[in-house]
Image 1: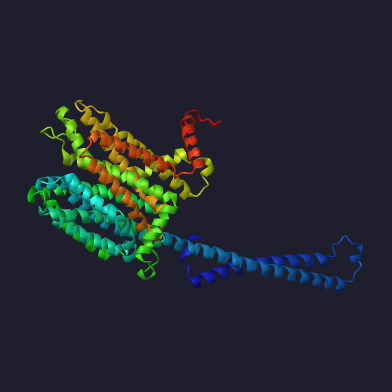
Image 2: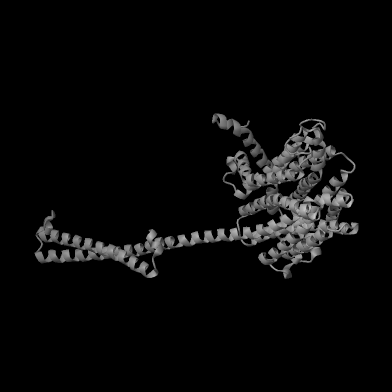
Amino acid sequence: MTALVCMTEEEHSLTRGGIVRSRQQSRLDGTTDTIHSMTSVVCSGDYEDDTSSTMPFSSTSSSSSMQSTTTSSSLTSKCEQQEEEDEASFDTIYTAVQDEPSKQKTKEDALSLFTLFRIQYLIVHTAIMLADGLQGTHLYVLYEGYGYSVSSLYSLGFVAGAFTSPFIGPVVDKIGRKKAAILYCVLEMIINYLELFPIFAGLIVSRMIGGITTNLLFSVFESWLVSEHRSRGFEQEKLEIILRDSTIVSNSAAIFSGYLAHCLAANLGAAGPFQGAVVLTCVALILVWAMWTENYGTGSNSSEITTWRGNMAGAFNTIVKDSKISRIGLIQGLTEGSLQTFVFLWSPALRTFANNAPAGSLGLDTDGEPAYGLIFGAFMACGVLGGFTEPLFRKLITKFTVTKDNTNADDSENGKHSVDLLCTMCYLVSAFLFLTPVFAKKDGAHSFTMCFGAFLIYELMVGLYMPCEGVIRSIYMPNESICSVMTMLRVVVNVAVALGVVSTNYVSFTSAFAALSVMMVVAAGLQLSLVPRDDLAKAFGKLVRTPFGASNGSKMKLA
């Protein structure tokens, strides 16, 4: 049958005709033999019937001839009918064999198109994350060198972001995500250029624009990815692959940008990393312009877009009417607000605990101070590890929580619930880890090591749940206004970060970490509320039964 794949149409016809003729000739030969046999029997007069023995020879021959003719016609008709069936059967087999390579080729083409799309996005994402990492490594040192309040300037950007979040998304959905990405790159180059001068007014403008670009960074690129992924008809499961890759790329870029920033600062001073950020952002702009296609919030072109006010009103109504989207917005605000506040808190916390740490402790330099560069790199490495292991944890969650009743259910439903449960687990673990600096003794010899270890595991949790949060947004948020909804929900994020950073001027870092722990517990509760109660009860029921069933092989049932 494999040989049929390479046949031309002419060869196909000849082969089919040869097979049919061969079968036809075989049947006709059999028919002739049957007729001859019957004739010989009749001519010999070897019948048990006495009447036939008295018939003249001529009558017997006539009767035999008629019977032979009838039998021959019947068998010939059957041969023709069988011939038609053989031809139909042969054509069916030939068509199926010929279609097999085309189906295989279609799958290969789809895979190559997805791989190309994946690379197309990740190249741009890498350049963006490198530039963003460069300007973040020495921001604290730069502002402190200028003699200005770091917390005030840092929080100013999030306050500006809170006010502008509701308007950015609708505008982006109207002008297009590609144009918005180019606008982000232009604004980032302006910001990094203003950071080079110790002018307070310029730094204020820089931070206020920074609040706008932060909203663009966390909405434009993901919304372009989700819309483009769906418009090209790729499977929903493959979106998680790109989101996981983007988390790995972000953390890997942060590691490399930290080393690059160290080299630039050593040669050009604290402003050197910002000069490098200008160059890398310009490269990202060129990549976006050359590699990306445009997509919009609704429809395929800008003429089908509603006004930005209508888009903003639609996004607001979507959030208000859909409680799941509202809860996702709160979860995003709590988790990302905790992360951004942690970025500001970990340095003073480790500095405090390092005072009584033994010399040579992991994470300390030769002077007994925290090795901030190495610690930052270790944090990002844990984030990369979390991104790589996310599929494994997803499979484990599915194995221990999806019941037999749901094995035949839609894969997207099982996948959605496993993502919800994995995020919940990560949030609860993070809440527990944030309590480490709260209960650690400031004069304890091992407090620094314990807190450093807790922070490393927290970054691992971040690497695990960030791709899952992207999957959850793609599942619940509407494609036609995803950017508008995402930026409007970032009001919660910006307010949470601004309050968290400003509060460090008035409360101790231990109280701030306690507040972060509470925020993560609330986020876990909200995330768990997205799972239907029946599915949640079945999942926890299997989770309780699985360890015992695995040990004794028995099937235990809950009462």
